[in-house]
Image (cartoon, rainbow, N blue to C red; front, side):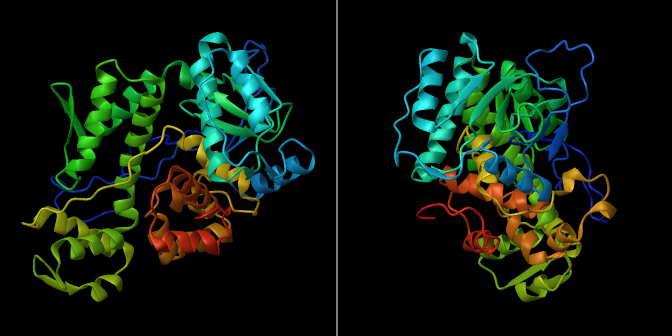
Amino acid sequence: MIEATKNITFTQANVQTSVNNSASVQNINLPASKPDEFVKEEDKNKKDKKGLSTKAKVGIGAGIALAGTIAFLIYKGKFSEAKKLAENIEFTPAKTIDEAIAYGKKHLGIRSYSGFEEHDLEAINWVNEGLTNVSNRMKGKLRMPKHIMYCSDESWGNSVAGVVTEGKYKGYFAINKDFFGNINKEVDKVLSGLQDSGYIKVENNKLKSNQKFLSQDMIDELEIQYERYHSGNASFKDKILLYNSLGRLNDGINSIINSPKYYLKQIFSQLKIKKLAVRDLTLEFSDVEKLSTEEQFKLLRMFINDSKNPIKFKFNLSTSPFGTIYHEMGHIQDMKPRCLPTGKFKTPSEYPKELQDWLNNEDFMQTANKVSAYAASGPGEFIAETFEDIIAGRKLPKEVIALYKKLEGPVVPDM
């Protein structure tokens, strides 16, 4: 499968309440276009010589099949065993493609690069810098892909990168040339979706919040990123950062629906209260904890609508343009068999027991949503999303780290 850091959809969830919608959280589903695996249909005309081979499988999300496949590929020498690179590698952007390839071979243990042309210099530097950051955070001991491929495939859509696990190119770390060839289009698509859903608005070329519950300092941070983009002064990495941050905003709003207890707890903390009074209800937090997730969401929604005390929620925006690389490297480091995430299946009736047990564990759901809504879609994605945040240097709640260790996520030095 090949996946975007945040491939974003804006659809309505099936959560029903009697609360007026006009000033409330809009209900949206988990991102559905973040696939776990992709099998390319046979290209009978062989038009795209730069694409993957016939029926090549591109894998990103962790699952029993993927984890087992990556283990097999390591056994067959397609990925490196965890090995020791230099503890600290100093990255300097290359000035030519040849120089970038030489850097990757010398410092990162990459055997080959394919598909990069001189006008793709920013893309290959992005790959090398992201991999270098992971290596440095891991103090040089990690598994690396042996081959980096920059290629096109119309089936990938707005995906960013992935690991090819079958076919001629198995063992390659694949980068989507179509996505990077038109980043502006992908950023504009996400901006449009968030505006259509009513979360943000753009007025006088400034990005503003369209929801009272969104933290102003978070919106201010997004506005700075947006202004840089709109003015035409955004660098290649600035554009990826904005794309990732908008995805994090969307994902954070999803987490309100999926983890309402976490946000209700924030309300108790923000208002410094022991009892929560909303409409004709008076509840202590111990009462809130006894409610079902749907009931907690209804309560949260009522409070957001009716409270005279403004409540602001701040979600983790992207702190790095390399989130995709960190996430996928998390999958490569994680050698434990994992069930595929929810997006892999057409209906919940197809979920294997391991995934059902994961989704039915309220503590897991509440904890995973503190990372992201996508982290809650399966234990493998929780591992990869958490690994991404650790590598990016984000401070995570102790419950997240505890669950990550319980699931035996990849050990990061000084975590």
